[in-house]
Image 1 (cartoon, rainbow, N blue to C red):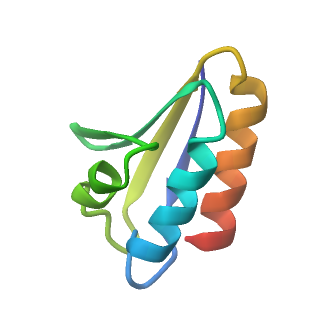
Image 2: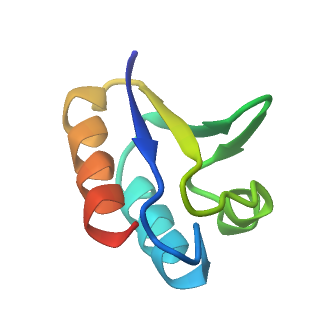
Image 3: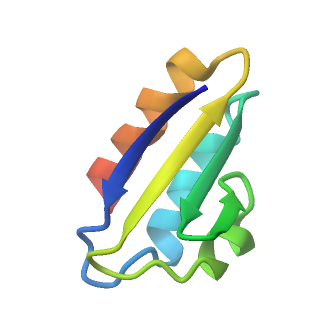
Length: 85
């Protein structure tokens, strides 16, 4: 398993457009990709779950990637967060 922590820099938090980009990117990989905020977690491949986390500006999330292609998936998803959020 690989993981990274990220603090949301977008003033609107995780909103529809960047969340959609995260989901589309996550769906390209076979690995399980979870986004965690406190006690809550969401499958990064499901838009409604990602939106339901309600992540706001300045909050920290942790993304955990586990599976056969985690070595590629983790840095790719991290790059999307850095570019979009």
